[in-house]
Image 1 (spheres, rainbow, N blue to C red):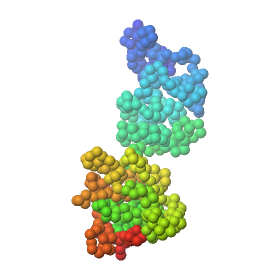
Image 2: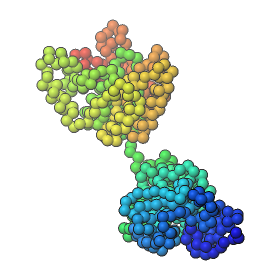
Image 3: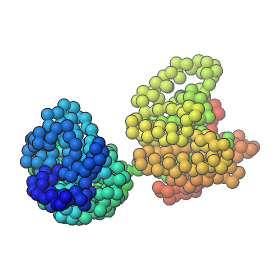
Image 4: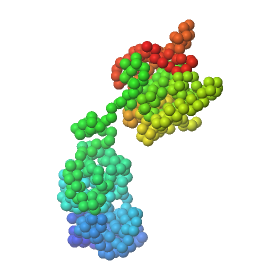
Length: 509
């Protein structure tokens, strides 16, 4: 069979531009530029010479129908035909994506693979300085119509919001032939993922149209906002992934919009002189050997949060939930009411209830715990919850070594190192202060894992002479700022004396 010319192209539907050669098993369209090998009809193994996908009815029974603000002319330009129950989008290789009209359901036929861009065959590579990419076929038609640029600035669509790796492999060269790639995608997780991927594939080429007012391009069109879309399109900003800052606007926004790493004074004057206070956005470690009084220092800091009306969450692994609450009650009433027998002995039940009501009335205090089997992942999830859902500015927990359980010291060290890295990043990301206690070994380093101290922004080292002859000295905890990334000041930072009658700490002036 010789060359058969002047046929209607099944891809762009233009008449007289399509030719094929059955002997050579190839076809070509001189209008849209599509070309390739003829497909086989596997039902009878005969050549389908016109490369027309099999349909329930003849293509002629379809019509170019205006829909959702898109004109029939635009539908025809992109070869989108509407039938009684569906609309069909023919992709470059002949595969068809079908949208049912009575419900938002899609299915595919005729070998659709999802590894091409809809409309890609209508525009020659590098035919313009810019190409616009959307998330949906109707969005692509909407953009083309609003820009009135069907033949000047190419507009194509992804086959889905989650493109395959094969699509990028197949389409990268074509997309890279344009100087600018303008994205008109939804402002959601899927749209952001597409933007991030394309920004990495095509550095300094990707620009994004802001969809602040409407979800997608078709909503702009149907709401009569074509002018607004064109303005947004022309003013599309260069896109960089969320974790990358590059433009002047990015850095000005960083300066103006980033919240301060606010701090809350600890109430320990000598310590505040060094560190100003506990810092939001930083990971603070209080370290000391066992029995020095780390938990009481932490409780003092927690009670101080309540006095400043700062929302926070706390978890003490080594004591019961009631003991943690009664420790705060003792500060409120300045009396040792840490056990039920003491409460009964002092006939203080009503006072304790009133103190609990006073401490919790503003709902600033969140006490939490993790169950057996829960670990680092669950702790990080809890911190995120308290920060984002509850508005907590600080999260206290102790001791860090008990959060993870390894079968050996080596495995525990690795788990603690990983947790420390995650906590330091999480505190900065959420602008939440994370305060923990670390037991130390004989060398004064955090037990099991030095990384705990390396990842901390602030390290408070506690010491106490438990063998001192003088009772007051035995009950005095010395504080040293060993690391102070926010403020630099280090060294001795005051003393706290424990009162065994009230079970509270007070600064020694």
